[in-house]
Image 1 (tube, protein in one colour):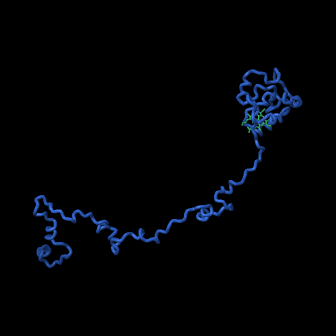
Image 2 (cartoon, protein in one colour):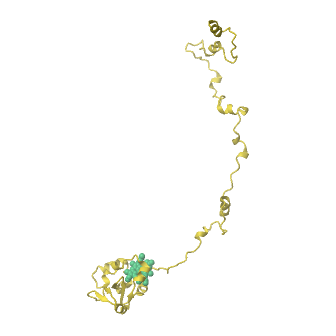
Image 3 (cartoon, helix red, strand yellow):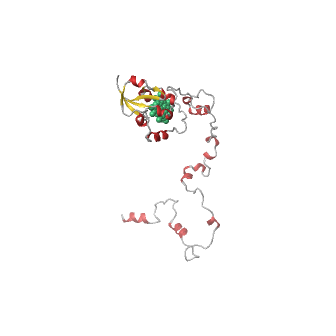
Length: 237
Ligand code: HEM
């Protein structure tokens, strides 16, 4: 056992060392401080000391990986076949359609809007037109007149029970009554204030205008607008 250990530790043993491994003496020679200087650094400036380090480093992973062409520029920057020229710009609708794979609209002009918006909408309802009201007949003027205390009932002093035949007799512009939701109003003073015009409003003079009113502008509060013109309730004959 002792002889085995001695033979293993002895430098003159028969064990063969790898010749690539430097001997301990060689390592000592490289790392030994410069004997000219006490601090261990040499004052001598070598030209190679100022040269920048090699890039990429000679031991870099990239170079090791591609050891066959160590200092070659990457191919993607030099080979034109890998970067084709950009496609020409899209100038018209046909180009865009073919590029996107969607059908081309039938219209030839590229400035035409999509076909869904070219159809002119049909007017199902009758066109509503506003009329120019005479000066002093704005909605605000009507509100002022209402609150002025002026007689807007056409002389009626108390509320009446009004039958359709009675209502029918008041169908002239200077004496016009109309019924809305069971209430009868004297519409004569309101005629010049009506934003839809006197002619439209006269269509319901002397009759029940509930349906026509609702069809035209159901959002208008007729009971509030004509409260000063209220003359009575619509009753059966
Ligand atoms: C006496 C009851 C009525 C009152 C208080 C009244 C009131 C009004 C008001 C406040 C507007 C303006 C609405 C807005 O700008 O949105 C208006 C517009 C109009 N009214 Fe009357 N209205 C009455 C009856 C009628 C009737 C019976 C008709 C139809 C036969 C009619 C036809 C119109 C039209 C065509 C407009 C048109 C303009 C528009 O605003 O687009 N109104 N009315």
